[in-house]
Image (cartoon, rainbow, N blue to C red; front, side, top):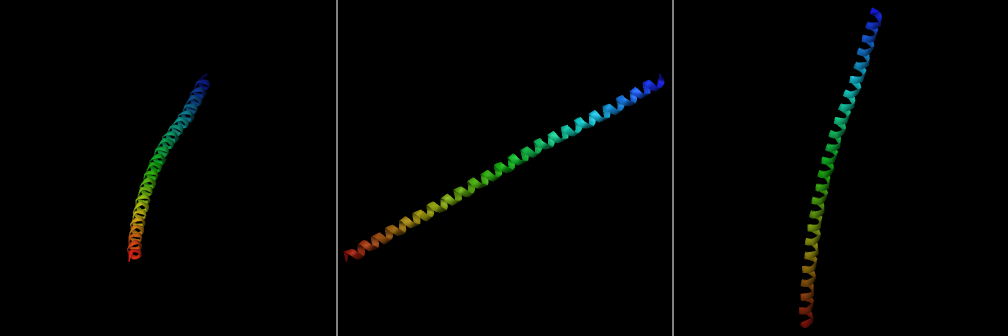
Length: 86
């Protein structure tokens, strides 16, 4: 009878230790997955912001180049008109 009680207690202790270890690992991995997802989302948001900034800068440069080309064309046209009038 004593062996039966001790064996049962030993089996309960072993099963409890295996179950508690599994839950801890799952909880840790879930927390890590959530943290990793949050980090990736933050990195993606930063990359998107950088891409928008770069696009704005390139658009500003293109507008400046176009304005310079229009001014140069207007100057050339004015000069050609003056030369044609002489």
